[in-house]
Amino acid sequence: MGGTMSRRHFAGLAGLGGAAFASGLFKLGGAAATAATADDFMFVQLSDTHWGFSGDAVNPEAKNTLKKAVAAVNSLPTQPDFVVFTGDLTHTTDDAQERRRRMGEFRDIVATLKVKTLRFMPGEHDAALDNGAAFKEFFGETHYAFAHKGVHFIALDNVSDPGAKVGEAQLAWLRQDLAKLDQAQPIVVFTHRPLFDLYPDWDWTTRDGQAVIDALTPYQRVAVFYGHIHQANEHMTGHIAHHAAQSLIFPLPAPGSQPKRAPIPWDASAPFKGLGWRSVGTEPKQAEYKLEEHPADKV
Amino acid sequence: MRCRIAAAATLLLTGVAAAALAAHEEDAGVQHVSMLAMKFDYLPDTVTVRQGRPVELELSTLDRIHGFDAPGLGLHTDIPPGAPTILRFTPQKPGVYNLHCDNFCGDGHEGMTGRIIVTE
Image 1 (cartoon, rainbow over the protein chains, first blue to last red):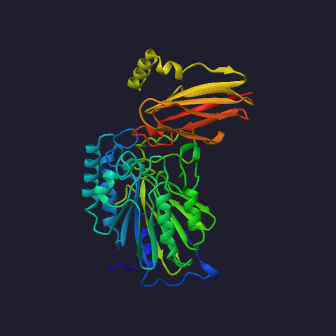
Image 2 (tube, each protein chain N blue to C red):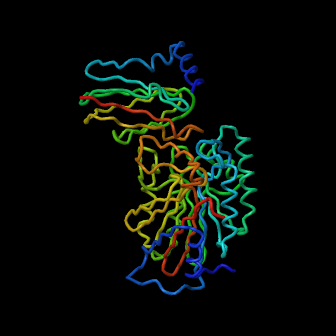
Image 3 (cartoon, rainbow over the protein chains, first blue to last red):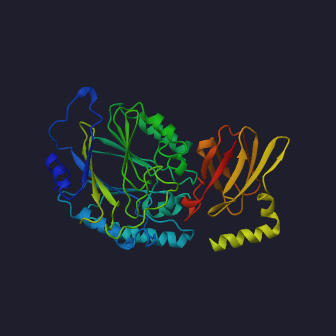
């Protein structure tokens, strides 16, 4: 199918049962969206798979949920250009050997994806206890940038520091990377934790996230995709859109909706409820993103 | 949980935790309270202080670095091993303020929470 993606293909994805959210936030000068171009493409975001988690009360299908998502992505009529995993690939453990075993199993499972361009990022469960050492052994650097069909992608690590900081060294790298770009350049940022204060009482924030937002703010076409909160959530900081993804292990309650951020129990009458993954149709010329949420029980 | 309680009880016997768990004390108008952090609890998990009077909150850890974040009171610090960490503040408004560990400490970190109750 190649790497192109048309509006018809975007619509076709909705037929898989996904809920769509169009992020048309970047129509500079009022420019309207036009017909699809050869540069349009789609990527898939999988997040918070927590491979190695065990707890029947919240997910008795923990050993199957990731595999179902892989099968679902493989069944898409148009394959994505790449798949990004926005952290918490594995569930944490104090045992360094067990951590590596979980990472190895995770890597083997996602290697069965048809698409072979995979972008990995750590969550605190992967990286906070050893500052990302095991993650780097299996998946490479924890922060990086790459260009794809006119979009500049930046993966930021706000978890390898257990105190949930990006840190001065990475901030300096980010500013240097951004300095090379035109301010109209479409930019997509991947992080694990929210960069803004979504709900500090539940630690849904990044200690120095505002410094990242400040660095991004001069750029007119920025969108952020992240995980951590185990639910879809949309938020704006100025003109920057922040999109949280569902989890593939257990959902968490809406911010502040209950006293504690405890996982939502498994509902036997609605298995996999609240779990899913996301496809993102991308139109670089308009810097538009069409988000479609796919439930985890559909293949 | 049973193991953690047993560990805490052992420490109580040593007298180390006894100091950390000392009842609310007050001298020269300063309220002295203590909390002990360990995977994955604060001990005690709730402390009560009075509005409008200075508080000296002593935080110690038994095992590793933990965090202490009480956004509603504007309080935040890491709790490194070694010496106690002291936070000084004067609560202005009665209420129940949640706190949590914001320094990832393992499988159970997300449940490491507590409260500061400010009374009139």
